[in-house]
Length: 443
Image 1: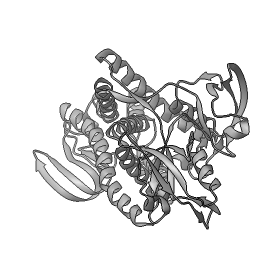
Image 2: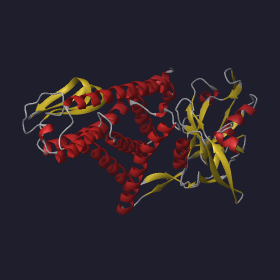
Image 3: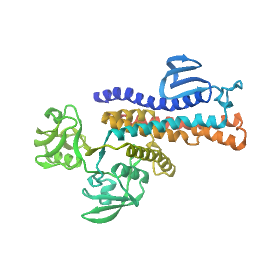
Image 4: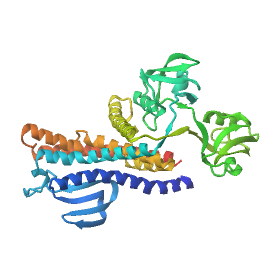
């Protein structure tokens, strides 16, 4: 790992953990507030698991910040069916079914409300949004898009019969197809044509990509230390306009122009801080790729416009975005069940911490949008009727209401132990995948 990778890791960990802890705090606060409201005694309110680093007691409740920051818990009297209990009225198990249901759903509900508030505030204050143009800007060589015959300048209309309203939606829809051929309708030179797009599942991330992107500005995403670009004065964020007076429409075009120089000096026209300037740089041969390079990673900057909404529009847009995020979770799980999406596409705590930090590095807007997405995802996953989740508690309570008596403690214990074993294996798997992907996130 290079030096900048270490600095990236130092930055990612605290920022990501703060974001993750905030999400957990909101979730547990929902459980805690309703438990207190209906009169259940709360022994512990903890952010994180394991050894308690900071703790204090107020009333009957101990508040703690624990060593393992991936999660948290609210420990209520009479909550665990394996505990003996004393039959007191302030125990969870002795409250009415509606009261216990309220406690169970309060955590996911708190995350949904928090996500809604984040987006509502963003849409009111104004957000940078990409233009609606679905014109293809770049087609990666050898990609599924290139094989399908898509060209720069084509306008994407429909994927598998569904009208495409933006590149974010398009990428999600492609991912959900999982490498299966689907019809893609484009408009080229005023004529509508339907092609067959068979996206490829990326072996590292487990989801499908098309290899096509929208029209965007080419920018310097990263400057490699010690290479010609750094010595010539190129900096991250520079917007590249042309090379030797030839316009650069895509990252691929930039790479080809540099390689085509055969080592001769080139003049790069760019914009930095709204000032146009030219920098001369001499490419060198890269021993690994056997191509001429200048030592930068090109990126794409999609042009955006500031959009402000009134309260009614912000309310509607926030509901729509949360619904979209919530249903995406269900579509992803369905994709995994059907084999369209690989299990390795899931991220564990390490990956989430990295993505939280990465979103803040892009902008405050991206960070808040990602936090809203995470809160919605957590809410949906937690309300699924699976053992040891809030949805599992709801399932037990509904069965109790139907049977007019709870499941036996032995049955509940067996179900919970099986569920815990499954989630432990899943946790270990996604954490392993996160570790494998760490070098990619640090680049």
